[in-house]
Amino acid sequence: MPTYVPPTSQLVVEILVSDLERSLPFYESLGFKRGTTHDRFVILTWEEHELFLEERSDLATSSAAGYPRANVRVMVRDVNAAWERALAQGAPVAQSIGDRAYGLRDFTVVDPDGFGVRFATRLT
Image 1 (cartoon, helix red, strand yellow):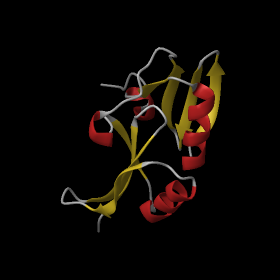
Image 2: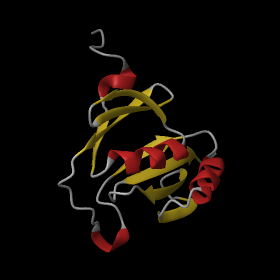
Image 3: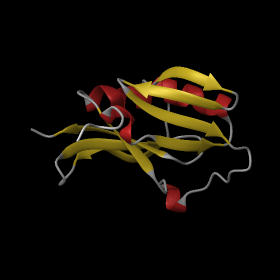
């Protein structure tokens, strides 16, 4: 059976943010590229994958015990370089970099609205 859409478009995460102008620099400094913008909606890209941000000014920005309620995982070739970039921008860290039992070296940072962004590299 032929695919309906390209695999990079099959599942796309949309994150609701309270202030798009505050959130965009956070994601761009982590390495996401800004694509199409429609009013209060922006398509960001990582390689060929898309991440949607939509501004909703009525959002609450809390998460339980400082850890995000949800996160998106971004697989990268060099998680240590991504870690250094996140630290350099002062991103709030939910989980420090480390080797995990599930076969990844990863870390999670938290965006201005409490959403987690996890960067990971496969362990060899």
